[in-house]
Length: 219
Image (cartoon, rainbow, N blue to C red; front, side, top):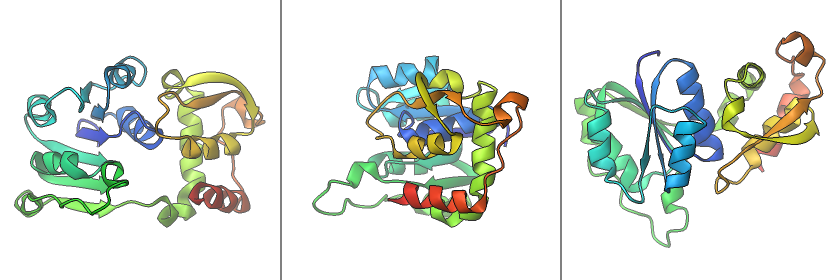
């Protein structure tokens, strides 16, 4: 909801950068967590987030306490681990925690210990739920249409590196999800070969194409 405080980890990655900007577009106050000054500056200058925290050089717990004195309403988690534990300790009442990834532990030989403060979800009456895009295939057309609208109205455009790439919009959506999260800048086509690009109407995506998109994204 507009006015809520949203925190996104992995905020300069392919998934986190889109999630953070959608929250901003919806009127939320958005704080991104990323690694390194370049990524954090990009979040401020290009993605226009309200604040950015460099987990490599800053005290994340202290910075969140400073930036979120009334607590965190929504946390979109891409990293897990210690960052997740820190955020759980600072959630607001009725907070929602979305678990989308666990980058911090992907290469661990042994599973990392889980957060030791899950009780705070009970105290704050919060909710924590896993998010996998395949559960929302039936709404893929709706999502693509919304992203198209944001990009067409330049809501997302200034936060992506524009390349002279000529492709259909569906292929662009697929490419966005396949780009490595290690890359700071994402790719937006310079021109979209859609008749609807002229009259600014969102594309009507056939169900077969939605399924094809989902299958490619899941590989």
